[in-house]
Length: 450
Image (cartoon, rainbow, N blue to C red; front, side, top):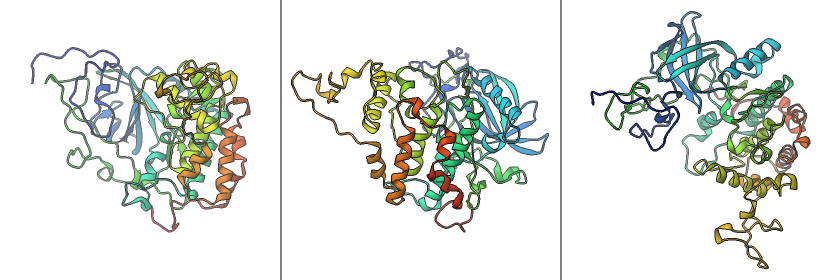
């Protein structure tokens, strides 16, 4: 290893100056460990003057890593969220969590993961806001992969929740949205990855039963982190941990419960952010075209998620590897195909529309060049939302499928003023039925929890 110390990496990421050998393990990108970025964490690390001892990695996001820790003072397990040093909205998350716990102390724990503590932690990459929450189970994205009916998994298998799970998941997450909206708060990052299953009480479990092994052979950690120049790096950890959500400790056979998590993108309706962090495929068209903020953006995201949870397929697949302009155009083309043409007041804001449409607003194959005058454009095949829904063949009868498709149409309206509120969607007959059926996990309600 080289003796001379490496230069301090720049704040932010320069893709032309990669520092590390590639790591292909499913975890955060190692290049994000730089000043302003992630805090390097190793299993066994302690935080807040030794109060919280890290036992296991639960997961990671674009702006944080989340760990299971033992609170030695209170003799309980907690989820420790360590936010990147340069995330400006971290203080907003804390402010909003404090606000909802003050204005609705009895209701908040039903809908949103409960904040237990917060503190600042200095590290090589800056000062990190750390939030301590009640521990939770896997995300809705992850849990579906653990259902017994999908094991062993085959390549062409459709991964989706059975309806008796899908409806309560959607209903409870919608109730949580209605709670936030009633208190003047938008979630801002409403997605399946931020809907978590509740856990059984794990405080009686031993640390050994919950601790993540520091073992590359067991696919618990990545190969050692190595710099390309052979120098030692003090801004990154020695290894990356793979997320190990507490799936085995999540009971959903008799009473399925989910909560909203990650309020890092949340904001008060009266004070919207300049740059919302809503995932690309869940953004409403006015957010893409005019950057306008309104009180229905979470509702639009919910309409997309309703389609996804029932069918097992996302409604809009926006390729992340393209430029922002190309991503937006791709998304807008999908919206046009699935939901119909944009109204004039939206369409006029689409600067690149002439690349894809004739002056008469007919879609042509732009890969063949510009549309020619007096030549019939080559139309591209398009599928409506209803056709995509039917193509997925969800396990429901035709009458209920029609009911769900009508509800999705009712939600995904181009005019925000015509979209129903979260509370109004809850009054839809399809959701009212959720009170009449058991919320068990699969085809056999007597199955044991994982």
